[in-house]
Image 1: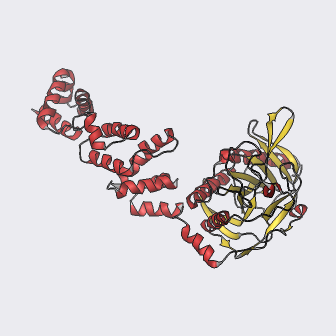
Image 2: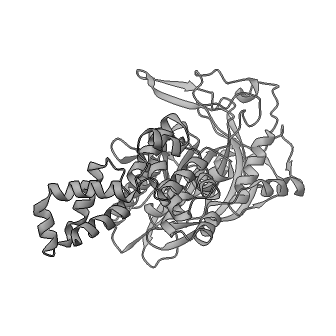
Image 3: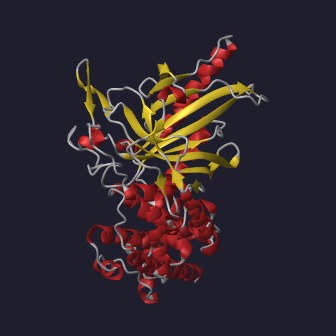
Length: 476
């Protein structure tokens, strides 16, 4: 981007709360049901149907707000946001406006350009989702699926705090991690559990006034957020440099063509004619309710990372990978508590465990106690690292105690000097040329000899003992 311009980005993230039922009725909030089957008079807005707030949704919303450092207000108000669109059967969406659930939070993230940066969370409010328009089911027609109507959401609105598309993506990854840790949402973008709208403007470097912002919608992955913001930023700069002006409008991002196109002129908040929902009294949360949600929060990722580096003497990179997901962090600690040395456990979890999980639907298939035992067998010299990897695969596939599996596979290392000496003699006798070269000063051949002994012994020879025996025999 030309240095003459500065990008300014704000984000609005809609996050589906992890509930079984919808926000104001008992219909299932499950993804993937046949179209228009999870609907009732309440979520369809039929006359006489009254909404009742979902208690679990309110708990999860408060938990998410507290995890983001927000002030959760004792009183908030549900409002009707009025607009007419085919996927909104009531003609309005129940949301919050002037008095949201929570305000004034912050979230720190690692900016690729600025190091640790902090985004302000202006507000977090509760609302219901709209239905979904499907443009690919019938030729030249739009289908409507109202299953999502009434699904509980929180909307998290940041200040205009990001200075590049890359920063926006880094913040979203951090936000997703915090919300998953807090148990508020599964944040599955493929199922629509997390959706992002972006506001982007540009201004000349050094200016403090904000430029005209454009909203970009229809973004369904973090990679596309970065791409959409880049495309829109470049469009605005080109427009301004050509002497044009930026219009406030809503753009849709097209991932196939990596381009944006206008959707409609952007509404101002007064266009929605917000007013308190007459069917829902103000939401009043007791102090004890808020404190219960605070107490229900687990140790959050940033705190856990710091503790891992201090308590287990791990590097920043190790700690970041191990705490990326709560399940992996808990698994790692269970391995250490079962007796494994922290650094060795970190290496195993980062490599074998995560690779195996990736191939098996993110399932951690080897019990922590079994991995700790396996690490102990390597440390004690019973198994080579290569042999241990084979045992790990076998335990993951079929279960069993690592030592028993290793014995059954014939992988237990031989530390009997007499047996190892026999293998060494066989190898040195078969490679007289290399022996002569070694004796003439080519000591770099040692790994070659060790490798040959490993081959002859089928990986059973203890590598340290093998090297000592080779050195002794070559010196004689």
